[in-house]
Length: 307
Ligand SMILES: NC(=O)c1ccc[n+]([C@@H]2O[C@H](COP(=O)([O-])OP(=O)(O)OC[C@H]3O[C@@H](n4cnc5c(N)ncnc54)[C@H](OP(=O)(O)O)[C@@H]3O)[C@@H](O)[C@H]2O)c1
Image (tube, rainbow, N blue to C red; front, side, top):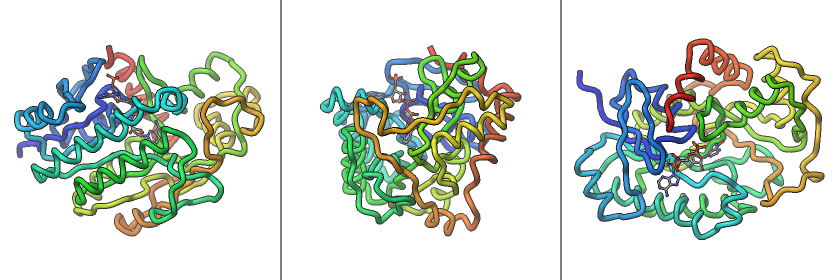
């Protein structure tokens, strides 16, 4: 049977490249690129003009995707604080364009949002919790959600926080820990900042499951656990047989950060669990898969994929 085409924006990014690896056996994957080229086995790429609606419409009519996953964004929290206008353009306006184009063509859309939408004063935010972002990144992603819902009410909006193998351009949180600790560097990790991370591959597969079930609206696709950054690093050390002695506890109140960050970003994944009928997974399970991915060549493959 002919594979359906999925178009993934932000094609050189952390999430897009891992998403592509997770589904390339069953989907015809086109990675939509911007400045950086991608050469990833079992996928193809296409330079897409996301900030010009007219051109984007034409490019969509040429590509005719059966599904769009919108991961492109300005993801540096400090960068967004420094350049709020660029953040607004990349995170919100481009998301609106993608929502308009997919809605006009009745193409299913997965829009990737964030766990950075809240003030972090409580734990396990649900899909109906009141948003109150504390920085420009969060504010532009919040606006993106509103515009995507307005333009394309059928879109699946995924709030998440993921880790995965990175590439030459970008390191994920787990890359930074692994590479630094393998080099013997001492690291300071916040024990008062919490999140609920998921492995990028698991995120991709569950999102596709939700698309199959034709669900729309906001879903928290995160792991089952709320964990501090420090405890995540300790679990990672155990899985990758790295020294925990290099990991030091620190607190965010003592840190000199440019942009304000929420202390608790944990999300409640009950809504997604009800649709899939099972739990999403624990940090230990995700780390074990991440380790196996390295043994099977994913880390090296992705390092060589971006230029
Ligand atoms: N990383 C996380 O832990 C995390 C957590 C929560 C939510 N998210 C969300 O998940 C999504 C993916 O994140 P990521 O970490 O994979 O991102 P990333 O690695 O920083 O990659 C961003 C991608 O966006 C593209 N891009 C940037 N500006 C663009 C523009 N003006 N036009 C078109 N493409 C543009 C980049 O292309 P070039 O390389 O060519 O510039 C790159 O491919 C984002 O929406 C982010 O907000 C990420």
